[in-house]
Length: 94
Image 1 (cartoon, rainbow, N blue to C red):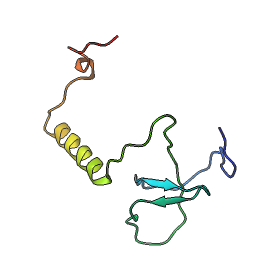
Image 2 (tube, rainbow, N blue to C red):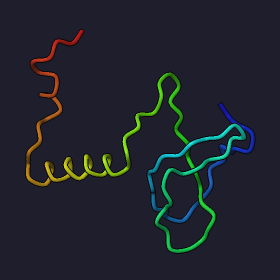
Image 3 (tube, rainbow, N blue to C red):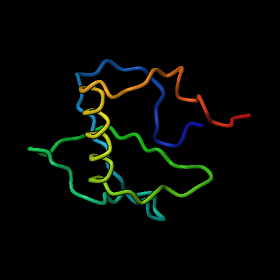
Image 4 (spheres, one colour):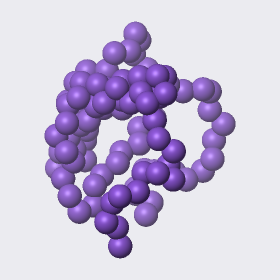
């Protein structure tokens, strides 16, 4: 679905830094970020908004998400991983 003011044209862009955060969309369609972004200068940015269709967004804080990502990365670095082929072993899946 293409929304008003959105474009599907492919553009050449400079390398970008991705920042994941949460926000609230008001009745006018405007975003209010839950926490300020840590950027060092004022500038125009591109925004991708992910909206759950059926269920509400879990209210995990950014810090909780960061901790989970950090723990997962530490497990990768220390070899505490399993092959994908073993993930479903022992589970009752239809």
